Amino acid sequence: MGGLVVSAFVLSSGVLFLSCIFPVNGLSKVRGVNLGGWLVIEGWIKPSLFDGIPNGDMLDGTQVQIRSVVLHKYVSAANGGGSNVTVDRDVASTWETFRLWRVSDNEFQLRCLGGQFLTSNSEDGLILATAKHPLSTETFFIERNAGRVHIRLLNGGYVQATNDHLLISTYQFQPGWDNNLATFELVIVANNLHGDYQLANGYGYDKAKMVLEEHRRSFITANDFDFLSRNGINTVRIPVGWWITQDPYPPSPFVGGSLAALDLAFSWAQSYGLKCIIDLHAAPGSQNGMEHSASRDGSVDWPSPEYISQTLEVIDFLATRYGGHPSLLGIELLNEPSAATVPLDVLVSYYMRGYQIVRNHSSTAYVILCQRIGNADPIELFQAGIGLSNVVVDLHYYNLFDPYFATMNSTQNIEFIYKMRAPQLQDLKAMNGPLVFIGEWVNEWDVQNASQYEYQKFGRAQLDVYANATFGWSYWTLKNDMIHWDFKWNIQNKYLLFKEDVEESFVQDGDSSAGPYRKYNGCSCLETGRSTGVVMDPDMIAGTGVEELPNGCGGTESYRNAPAGSAWRGIGERVVCCSPSVFRDHEREADGWTGSRSTVPGA
Image 1 (tube, rainbow, N blue to C red):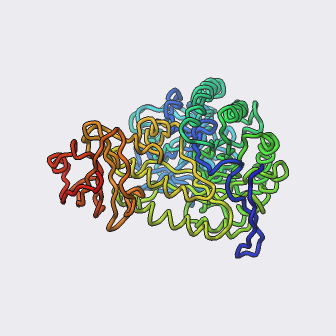
Image 2: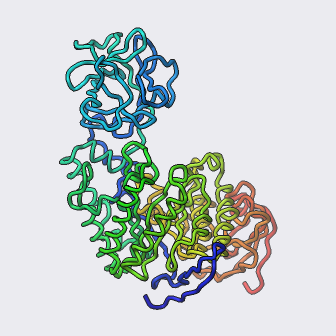
Image 3: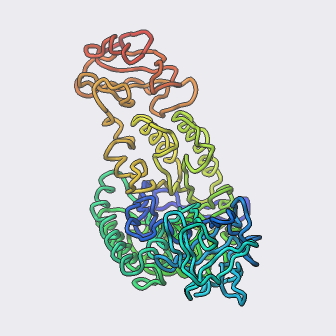
């Protein structure tokens, strides 16, 4: 598109790289919001989607351990599978943990650590951990009674432990729920996968179709695009799953309809002046083993040539369909590949091929490359020399999901944004490589019982620092049952304030937690100042000066103080500008302020 200035430079790898300098396809920078949980399901965003599934604690990927009530030993697949199954472990670990593949409400296949399945396909009735592809002989009917289970073969026989610690399938009678060798305790170790696979396979096709059609119709609407356009957002990042290419009849258990919804999103974006980033969030085989990549059981199989080839076909489909659409800003080739399971050379090769596919259909669409999550430095993508123009590297910044953040207080979290995030962005910018995109971030942390004002400060710090990302940023996510992840809730309840909204951040007259602007008897008081240590608010720096007061308050006063026990702990000096007729000493003292007062000349 017009208005783009192109510059050329050479990376350390010696590859000539062309990058578009702003504006970004007509935008100053991306100020975006993710439409998470809409076309790719993440159960934690809207847990009620899963409420009607029978045996909802035994979805695909649920990790279970099985213990004999007579032997008091756990069922074990030694070495993670490949041989006999025993009932001889006092303590359960990885060999004793099985991942469920759900066949129906009560029928399951059990996958071992090494990928094999438990099977009854043996002449002597032994249960083995040797099947590579589960069929009927690897399918077990699980009868539940509180925490106890019976495990039955489809042919009617029951699984039982033996006194010599083997697991066999020759028990032909209906066992009771007392202590007997055919009764086991079922321990659910983890039930943390609630994605598209779990929802569709848990309900079955007909019910899942009803649930997903209603969700796609109501969760994101044209009104949401209107809301975003009225609140300073210019872009939506839309996660999609690989099965969208086979809509309306994708492979089982997935449910069609996401392609029609994506078409609607592009139409709404065009109506409300927004741009769209299509984000391949869920790739064939799963690139990270998480629910948002539609993994069935936590396995990561995407790096295989077969799955990579399928993924490139997905990119070709999306680029063909939307490459010429005026609302397309970019295509993200893959979301959050795992550093632990996706080798860098495999990922770079895929990114290079994906880049070329997009270029075959659009010369201007941005090609977005997500960093690997886990123990990986995003600089690896800057050094890879992927593509020649309009290339973006996507970083995901969360002060969460790591023990490092677990004990931080609000001040330390804000300090981390300024001292760690900001320098990294500056370093990446200085490399003169791809543009930088903070594709996911959130106004949430591990701080317990934080005040509204602390959330405002944390959000303000992120907005100020991420504004330095050369491509822009995108909040995760528009709607979420967890309110601080919900962009709409944050805006409507003033927990997240854009720069232009700061003057509207009053809470109540005289409320010392209100924020950088406070009201006293209807007059607005602006606080500015300098920090002796960490700059906790970019607006509170030396040299900000005295600004004209709104509401006709008239005069101003300045105060130098070190507020004791206030939300401004760490700020060594500030200036408060307010009308002397309404701002009294006793009010200042009631807020815990100390220091001297002087009248500003000309007030």
